[in-house]
Image 1 (cartoon, helix red, strand yellow):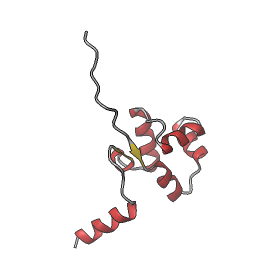
Image 2: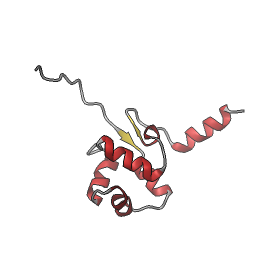
Image 3: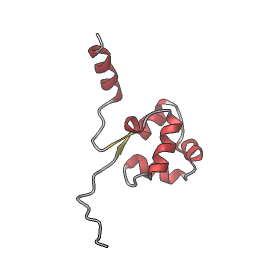
Image 4: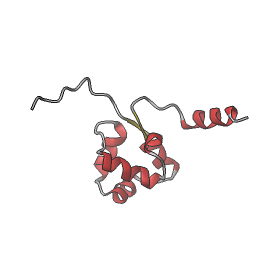
Length: 91
């Protein structure tokens, strides 16, 4: 069996910190809800660690959002900019 060839590692950006702040949720509260430790939440928010697929789904379930609203391969723009641009485009 040949080894898997991997290109340069692509970053995974997230909105975990923003979503927590909007809900006035502490890192400890999120950690309890998804079954990880507080330090792991901080590492995810900073981008030091990437979540497993299972953990990503558990985090998204807490925020009741689809994966692509919480995680992305490209940097997120401000949520307010996205919301307002969607409203303006809907007219």
